[in-house]
Length: 320
Image 1 (cartoon, rainbow, N blue to C red):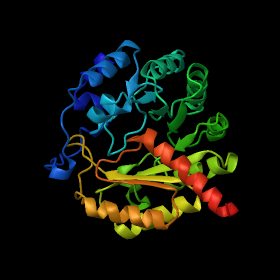
Image 2 (spheres, rainbow, N blue to C red; image 1 turned 30 degrees about the vertical axis):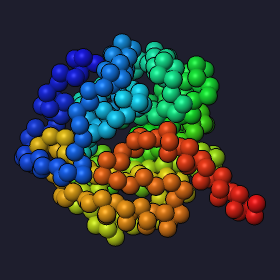
Image 3 (tube, rainbow, N blue to C red; image 1 turned 30 degrees about the horizontal axis):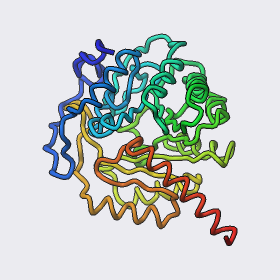
Image 4 (tube, rainbow, N blue to C red; image 1 turned 45 degrees about the horizontal axis):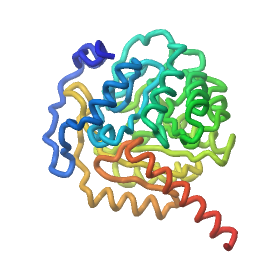
């Protein structure tokens, strides 16, 4: 991991170097965060280094890392730290991944136990090079965490498993508490923002999880500020509700380097509030919509609210 940290943008994203630069815009006041300095942040970082684990917090340059790691809430990134896709928004390194690490599930479980996490989020890079897209590694990680920390609830944020028959079924049958897969943006923008993915493949993944096990909470996230129109966001929300998705997150896209997709605009906090109102009206059990919202931001407290919302809905339906 130390070696990975020292990679330049050119080394992390060689496929983007031929693209013209998109100047990085100055962030508005409502989106600026302080650099991480807390002792807890450094303790968490030391633990991740010691166990040779990757986190999406670091690899994707998440703006909330200081706040989350101060509380020792880290989002683990499995299947290595090199992605086989080259999405225009993402800061995770791309290239040819290393071989699958058979000891990674055990190390993740040890870290979860040492951090004393009540709720953990596990994500991954895309591994199009693997026959199952990395599904079995998710299954093993879930199993190891349950073995060492049986009281910990588990949220997974998976790739789309495109052209990997049986992968979604295998992971769903491991029964994570939350199955998250991000649509990221409106379908019109997929060719430029998410060229390796297909909108309806991602939507069908979420739909399939609910059909396999309706008790699993499903979740998806969107970035805004990429050039999407409000009417397109409303349609994506409707598509997610048609797939019976429980939880939607909406956050501001932030451009990692000049070679990444340009920010079309900074969406105001008031607009995020209006998106939350629309999403709740469409029937989502849980909505997180703010400039700094990310898929795993406040995931522990949000999970408690999500579970309470389902219980309230069931109670209302039964007339209690």
